[in-house]
Length: 138
Image 1 (cartoon, rainbow, N blue to C red):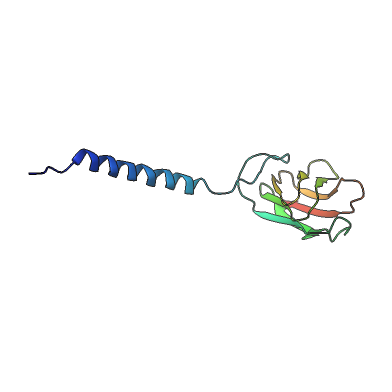
Image 2: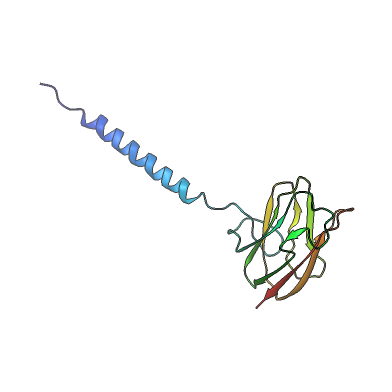
């Protein structure tokens, strides 16, 4: 008479359970790896709002960003998404506003808008004419 190999069956079941647990953890961790910080870049949550730079807009002035003027509430995360093929360095002109820093081609950076006010921002790379406005409301 042949006895079932319970030990082998238990090992297979526990291995299957382990694989499901690992898969669930990986899926749960597959949220955003966007950046969000206190206006300087770093790991954090997904964006509440997105401003986009499209291809070839390095010399488009106020039309370089979509939208060219954006309004968000204090504490909201704003993503600057660079869909262009070149690097941009996007920072506010006045102190206290969100600044996204260097954005390589095809990348994005999130920052948290911490201080209410109206902030002009631009690309600080020479030869780039890119301007926008972000209004942060309480």
